[in-house]
Image 1: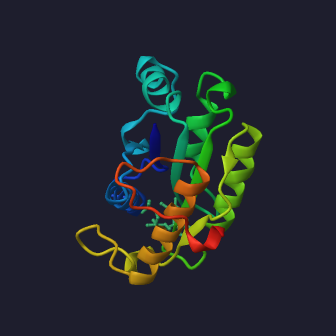
Image 2 (image 1 turned 30 degrees about the horizontal axis):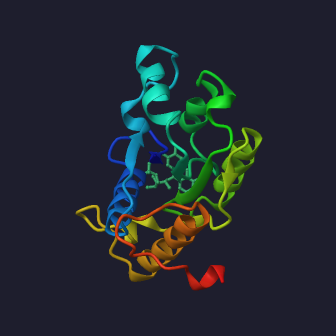
Length: 183
Ligand SMILES: Cc1cc2nc3c(=O)[nH]c(=O)nc-3n(C[C@H](O)[C@H](O)[C@H](O)COP(=O)(O)O)c2cc1C
């Protein structure tokens, strides 16, 4: 199971728009995914709702695509709370993750993705080296929430093709060939 985590609880976030775009692009590539949006989650309390998400989403997910906004030069506290509030580190062990940063500024959360990769490595998650910064996101996403910037779409497609190959994912429609960048 492949889960895209939208790493903020902020309403109408650009991060969730990008997460939905990732889901659509992967669908075209023959890869089915689910979205876990922290907007809908109480990550502060360990309760029945949190436990249900652990059992039904986090534990069965072998691959995580984490879209993380840049908040004060790093990834959001709610995303750290998702990890810190979970039952045990062991539910994260030995999974594979792909990271994308989202920011209105120029850095595209590069620093925050490095912070996040360090935390994920601590809980034995292997992170794909292509951590994609999406900077000046306001000019990348149109009013309908779709990505309108051709270079960004190209970079996402390349990143996802690499992830599919690296993660040994099996597209349903044979649409993804080994990307040149991993030859
Ligand atoms: C609490 C907070 C802190 C932020 N800090 C930064 C920052 O350090 N650098 C930056 O480029 N943008 C910063 N932003 C703006 C976000 O990059 C912008 O909201 C972007 O759309 C991604 O966040 P979103 O998914 O919540 O929309 C911040 C936004 C919030 C809400």
